Image 1 (cartoon, rainbow, N blue to C red):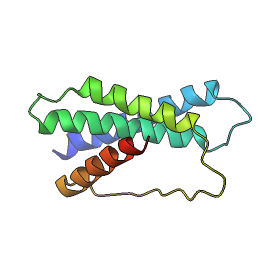
Image 2: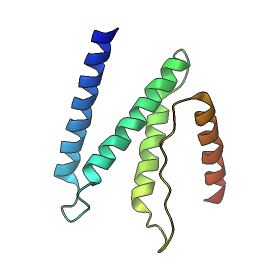
Image 3: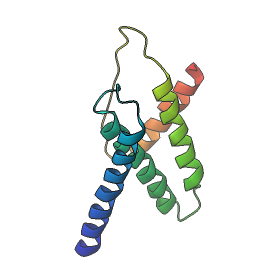
Image 4: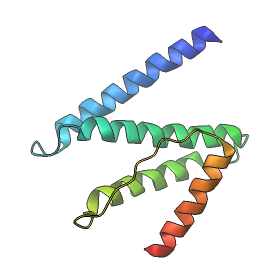
Length: 114
């Protein structure tokens, strides 16, 4: 329904803005200026992923556990310093079954590297 979708978009933007303001007030001021916006978008993505998986599973997926795991992943990413000269890769992928499967395989392979 278009009206419901419009309301969802507005509420989501409000949630991201509140998260960004919260982070801006609590992150070290000497940090990168983009960090509050980047982290609020990442937190929103984790939240959407957990809720989407919960919905697609018919309520059988553990959204709380997925969100908790995602937030822990964010904490680990922030704590790690990339090796000097190490290239970083960021990607935007469609939310499809194939992309989710590929990411789960990559996540498993990455865990083996740790």
